[in-house]
Length: 127
View 1: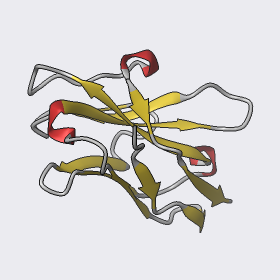
View 2: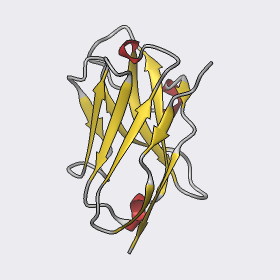
View 3: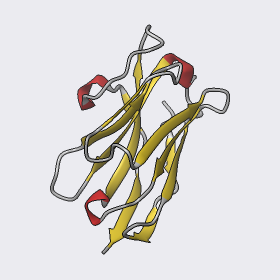
View 4: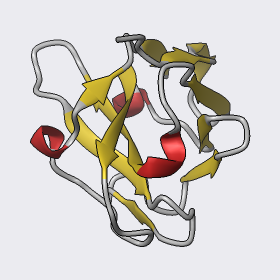
């Protein structure tokens, strides 16, 4: 099945901002809880942010709370991650994922709750 495509990554300096996008042409994301995860070299994939099907509920990892904002546009079948005040420790490959849910307000934080993933986009923050 078609995987979503992440974009917007790049090389920035500490304190800069980036906006990531995840476009899904393979399914209607309105049926899915969506999330952003990241994986640094030598580390496991970790949760960053999740947003409910309706967009009314969001949840963030403590490490990004107050700096990152997740949003979605179900009409465009897309999910976004606005990243401000970037730090070198934010350097990683960022992945969007989807988790089917019957609840409009549920969010998901565990990697294994997600059924599909994009290929990822690299974010590198220099000090």
